[in-house]
Length: 307
Image 1 (tube, rainbow, N blue to C red):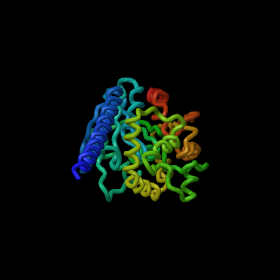
Image 2 (cartoon, one colour; image 1 turned 90 degrees about the vertical axis):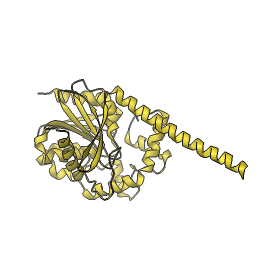
Image 3 (cartoon, rainbow, N blue to C red; image 1 turned 180 degrees about the vertical axis):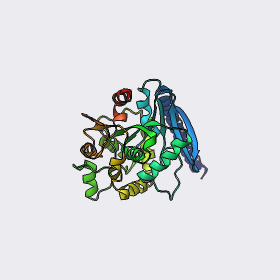
Image 4 (cartoon, rainbow, N blue to C red; image 1 turned 45 degrees about the vertical axis):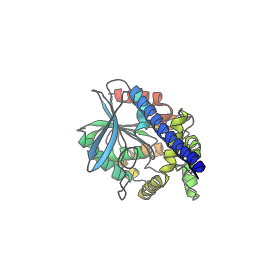
């Protein structure tokens, strides 16, 4: 028995050491990315919920950026790096995602998150700012702009959710067939399939970071599935609020987006009553600010510089 226990204990210790090293490598890699983007990690307690967020200092314009489903604040880290000095960037982890609190029993619909985001911005003393969002985060940003117009100087949407596209996306066709959502990974090895579905050219990730995100996505599968169920039950909530948006709006979309079809822009052009500009990017997927952060930041910078 002693000869058996010693190798077994060694294996257990090796696994623990590997997990610990992988976690340390991940934290080091993420912190390096944030450092290169001049982002500081912060937290704030809002209505009993602990929000984690990153902030890039600036004294000119303030830009609040909202991540998509299954994402977190670091979806905007490389994007922030390419914005000029002077633009203050605030990127929160929405409750239920990233490092923020994830209490069970809460509503995680886009409208509920927009209301929470309002209280988050109030807690930071933000009076008037630009707001950007991707996918689910775009739906939340749009609802926020409709419900709290006095706070929003302009709205920037990256492949936003919350509006029904005239042409179904590949994901919608899969959903209509009753198949599992392509946004939920079935195993750590399935992460490559998710990247290929989301991007035309997936961003480079060191192997240790890729493994970390793959395992994290699989571990969060059931939790994310429960949130996705709430969002689907909510329906196309933003579409009913489009006429209430007063802020000038920039819409950026990847033409090869398989998650949400770019014809959503046709609906926005038809229903929105405010100033609206649209940009359709060739050979781009569902999250342009991740796939091409430099180009995305340039488009946003040019938009913010307009009179």
